[in-house]
Image (cartoon, helix red, strand yellow):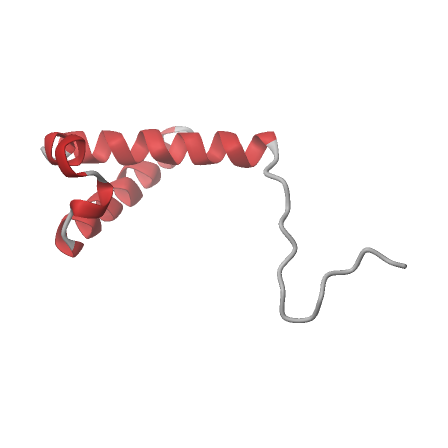
Length: 75
């Protein structure tokens, strides 16, 4: 018997240390962006799910800008 997954199902892959590190870096970047936008207190009170779409979009946009700037500075 082979260890293939059933059609229509996804095999769960274990997270590698690299993926875990990348997730941690993105989480830290998200928290940094929320802090810069003055949203960390709201996150502490109601959690990430309590933010509006506009607020989460602002965080994502700022994360993108920070990543681009850091990437350009390392070149």
